[in-house]
Every structure is written in C-alpha cells, then in structure tokens.
Length: 499
Image (cartoon, rainbow, N blue to C red; front, side, top):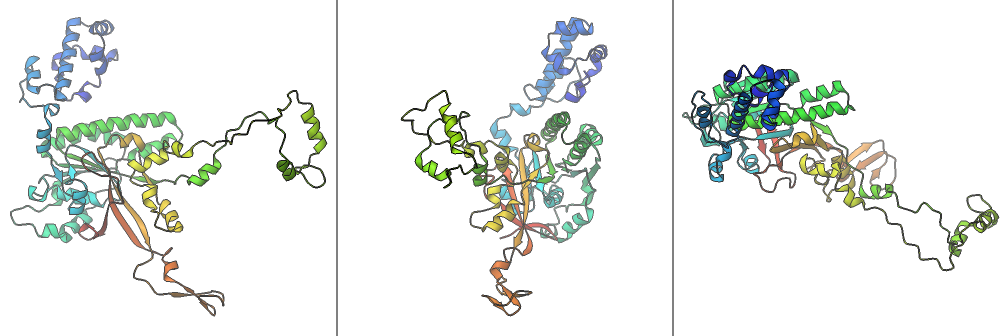
C-alpha cells in the first residue's frame, strides 16, 4: 500500500491505520487490493476479512469519484468521512459543457493563435520542440486579462538546465507593443507573478512535481506551468546507464509513462496548461529509393541451373582461345555436366525473371518514414522538388528528431515544432562578383579574375536564418502537419509572423 497516497493523495487513511502496515509488509499494492479476492488478501496479510472488504470498497469508490464516475461528496458521506462539496466529475460532463469551458493562452501573435486554434489550451500537455522563444511570451501572456484571450493568472517556470532569463523578459515588457498599449484598467504583466523552481536531477524533479507543484497550483491558481526542458534529466540518466542498456531504456519508458499520467492529471485537476520544451537530436535521412533498390537482395534458387547455356551466353563468356573468361577450362565444365545425375530437359521452361522485394511497401513501415508524421522535421517537406539537388541535400542534413522518442510522443496532446534553416543566397543580390585566383581564358573569366555569377553564389552563400512554427499534431486543430507552417522572426518585442 505504499502507492496508495500517490494514487489517491486525498484518501482518508486515518480509519485504516491498523490495516496499512500489514498490507505494506506483505507487498500488497493498491492494484492488488481492488483486483484480487479479498479472502486471498486477508489470508496473506492475516487481517479480518470484513475490514479488508471495507478498505477495498472505499478505495474503489474513491477512484470512481476521481475519474468523475460518481459525485465526490456522496463517497465521503457513504464512508463516514468529513462531508465535502459535491462536485460533478470531469467524465460526467457532456460535449457542450466541455466546449463552453474551453480556455486558451495567447501566444501574443495572431498567426500563431490561428494555427493553434486559439492558443495554448488549458487541461492538456503541449510540447514545444526546437527553439524556445515562445515560452517567454506564454509566461507573460497568461497574466493578461480575458480581453486578450488569456486568464489573468500567474505562471510557473520549472527549469532543469538554466535559470529564468529575466533580462529577456524585461526586454519583452518594454519592447512589445501589446504591453505598452494596455489600457489603465488592465494590469500589466510583471516578473513578480512568475514562480520559478529548479530541478537539477530526476530525484528533485519527482519530488517537486509530486508534492510542491500541486500545493503551488492550489494556492495561487496558476494558469500555466512551463517545464524547460523535459528531456535534460532523462538524457543525463541515460548516459550514466550506457547507450546499449536495454533494461535502463525500459525503465525510462516506464518513468515517462508515469510522468505523462501525472502531468495530465495535474492539468485537468487544476485547470492549467502544461507546456514542456524538448531537445532535439540530429537525424540522418534514409537512403534514397534508387540506392535502396540497388542494395536489395534478389531472391534466387540455391540449386544451380541445369539448363544448357544459350549460344549468345556462350559467346559472351568464351574467349577466342577457347577458355572461360574467368580462367577455367571448357573441357572441365563439360565433364562436370556429363557426370551430373540429372539430365537437362530438351525444352526447358522459360526462365522467370527474379522479382526483387518491394522496397516501397517495406519503407512505409519503418521508423524513418513514420517519424515524418510526429517529429515535425519531414524529409519531404525539407526538400521540395522545385529546389535543386544541392539545396535538397543541405535541407536533408538539417533533419532533427525530438528527444525521448515515441514513448513520450504518446503522452502529449500537442506538439509544436519551431524549425529553422539557413537561407542561402539573397534575392536582392543580382551582381556578378569577381573572384581572384581563377585561371585565364574560358567563358565568364577575364585574365586572372574569375567572374562568379549571382545565381551560382546564391546556391551556397548563407545569408540569414529563416524560422517556421509548425503544429505537428493536435486533436483540436484541422489540417495539421501540412506545409512548413507559419514563418516568423525574432525581434526585441518577442516573435512576429513574416508576411
């Protein structure tokens, strides 16, 4: 029963203090209590059967109340506990009630809010992968009034790597035009309404998320919890365990599933948005289809063919000296055929061409292909057919993959990818540039000076960074994952869309 308070933090254990020590001693968990026969549990723990049934029924009704299958106030009155306010569970609400309670936090950019269906929703886990500039906007946007599509509530910033960048937040408050144009009736966001917590390792992270954060959300009614970043502590633990340790990877998968369930429950219970940032790793694009087809093995029969070679084949493999092209003797080959126990047929059937296995259908089931749909970095989107070959190769080398893998992707409701890539060349640079060191003679060359055209120079010259915001997946947004997304730029006041 060591996991009872973790499963049901508000469960009244005062009435069962004489039962819990025996249950813990015999390693009986909460799952065992509600799934096993009470008679078996009573025998193992040497407890009265009636008391075990009463505890099991109380735990079961408390779980039903937590899931919204029953009214919470009736459960406490039924078991003689202190009466509490009767609240309607979340699973007992219909679709209209859920739609009316839909609330979002603005990103302070209209194009971003439109792509997200209104903003960052409350009650869900949203992941932002790549650059993290949008996190600072959210920390201030949650403090705005409802007229700006926000909630006028404080925010919580949990850091696993570095402290809160307060100088940048102060710059946003000064340079963003929205904050400077607020009417006197609206309170301006401030750094005092951002609570910060530091989690340098997994042990402190588990303690803060289990005990400190729920108390903070209950007292201050925070609307936003930002965890920056979610992968830092897990990647450090993985390096200690070794990259090839399968047991460590399985244990980490269990931890990620537990963390996802904990954050989802917290988002629903306290009506807040959980936004986590994630790190990315380089991903190598799979081999091109021609190379994959060339590398595929062709199915052939392991028995040698007994059909006599055709005349064209003999002429192709025989040298004028009457020997095989590989260096063998013709007589030796004929003697080998004569000693064969099976005689070849006079009219052998026509040879069927060997069929190579379809690489297209096999590639559709590989992880390299499936990652295009849930990572945010697609090989096809990164290299449109209209661009030249060299440009496509450069874009394919910029592929990334969010950390923590597919296990963590199944725990979140929305993934936002902030993608950036270099812009090669300049549309305004149309002049030809002479380059010293060229050889004299030839077209486009004058003496010892080689003239480099603007078109060829634009293929490789990195001019600046271009950035896009892309909604990879979200159940409340229509048409996600299409195209590159919304292009934006970073300035003193935060982020803004590029028209």
